[in-house]
Amino acid sequence: MSAKKPLEGIKVIELGQLIAGPFAGKMFAEFGAEVIKIEAPEGGDPLRQWRKLHDGTSLWWYAQARNKKSVTVNLRLDEGQEIVRKLARDADIVIENFRPGTMEKWGLGYERLAAENPGLIMLRLSGFGQTGPYRDQAGFGAIGESMGGLRYITGHPDRPPVRPNLSIGDSLASLHGVIGAMMALHHRNMNGGRVSGKGQVVDVALYEAVFAMLESTLPEFDMYGVVRERSGSNLSGIVPSNTYLSKDGQHVLIAANGDSIFKRLCAAMGREDLGGDATLADNAGRAKRAEELDAAIGGWAAEHSAAALLGMLDEAQVPNGKIYSIADIARDPQYLAREMIRQFTLEDGTPLKLPGIVPKLSATPGDVNWIGPELGAHTEEVLRAHGYDAAAIAELRQKKVI
Image (tube, rainbow, N blue to C red; front, side, top):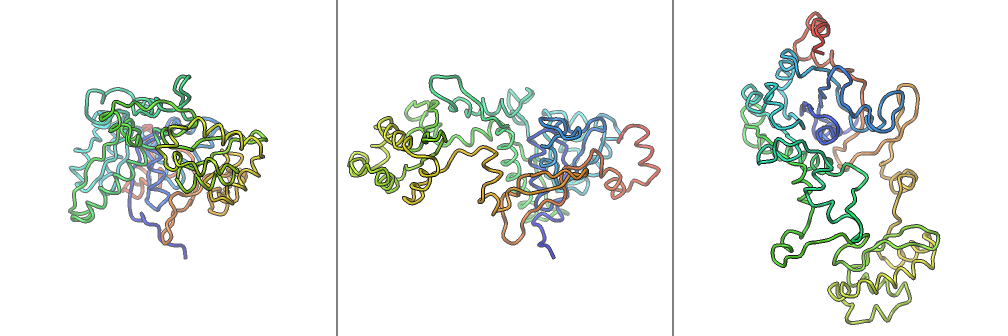
């Protein structure tokens, strides 16, 4: 008998599309919540068509929408909006990532839904949040990364800022949203539960989720006027922590910024002169000589293959790692041992690898029950469960409401 999942019994209505809202919905679904994903009848979530496709469906979709129930509803029609209100009457969480004001325009704002379900929690993800002078502007992950400060400090000092080749701003907002929704859910359940407890709105702005990752940059600027700049592959003020090129052209990260770790690295390099130098005994001293140390470590790394380099660093207990491509990840024994590379089969028999589950719970782990569903695969099932009979469903289809 499989372990019960931690969110079994929790009902989530996902009204978002693309990345921020659906990523949050994915996490709830992986850990047992019933996630009902509302999609437009014509085409569904645009993510279904993003990046590489197989038989017309995005490979990304199979991961992003796993364990979700796909229900098609035209939210621009009154009858479609009424369907969502009916689904939300016994829901725990509603997720939406439309521009602020859109849900209210459709009659699906928090006040309207909470009037019939006071315990409802609404997770609202947007570029700039539900308040403030920028609330009505369109915002994507790239904008959040820029305004949140991440782009400015990413790249090389003599070149324009660069972006990670991922929508990291959306994902960071999703993670903050899931944490916020779970805190709100806990608060409600500790103060009356679903029946008499009060829900609330969880308001996540993409730029704020990125800004929350900026460590000490704000107090350093406030007190000393220091603006952290781009530093290439270095970590500003933390030495040594950089990427070095091996003899066979592989990029290897060496993080020896702890005092005792630095001494072990120096011993492995045969540079006891550096390891015994009192001026390099702490990070403050090493930071003053960062270029000198990088040159010494880089010269040593260039004399060895990546495999030999990693072996010596492991033996010296110096944190290290090759910079992995997805090809490296897909065959790595650590990934495989922890089931982070999962094998699935598409309906036409095509095998497909997808990422495993994070985080790993020892007693109530998450799992993948099914991968991203076909558009509207669960419409009839969900509507029947909410009081619609066959004739009503047929009429809704005829009117193109679903």
